Structures are given as C-alpha cells and as structure tokens.
Length: 118
Image 1: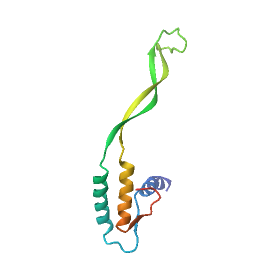
Image 2: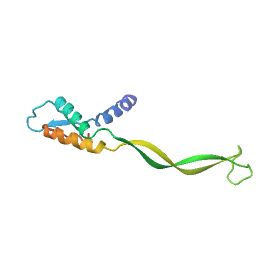
Image 3: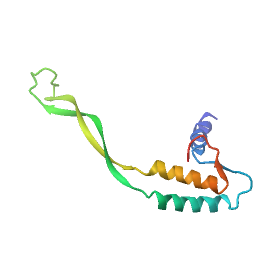
C-alpha cells in the first residue's frame, strides 16, 4: 500500500504544473486554437534569445602537497574551496513571451486558473 502511494504521489504533484485554462464568457476559439495562435504570436513577438549568463560557484579542488604539511591527507593531497565562474544559457525573452501569451489568451477569452504561471 505505501509503495503504491509513494509511486503515485509524484505524478499527482507534477500534474499540478500544467496550466489550467477556463473560458471567460464564450470564447470565439477553442482552447487548442487559442493556445496555438497565442504561442505563435508570442514567439514571433519575443523569440527565444539565449545569452550567456554567468554565476559564481564554489568548487572543491585538490592540491598536491607534502604529507607533512598542515591539512595534507595521507595520500599527499589537501582540499580547498575556490571561487570560480560558471556559464549557462539564459533566454532573456522568456518572461516577456509568457506575459504576451497570457495577454493573448485573455484577448481570445481564456483565463489561466492554475497557481503556477504557465
């Protein structure tokens, strides 16, 4: 019983991540039609624009040392934390695109009712 519940629980949690839309009055388009139109329009208005972003990260490095040195382990290495820089891609238009999509859906007569913006 517990194993079954444990297996089902993540599916229940993840199902809440999908956007839930409800009609505002009587929309002129189906949800799928409005979704396709707004996806296309928002992507045209705010295309994916990946830029390289950086962040500081702390990494543990091993340094060769004399076994008699302070902090040196028996294998002849000591470990220190060093600051470094890590690069990653970042879509700088994602928030504008999501806002344009949501506005377009509202214009088509649909409202997002999920607690996570989608």
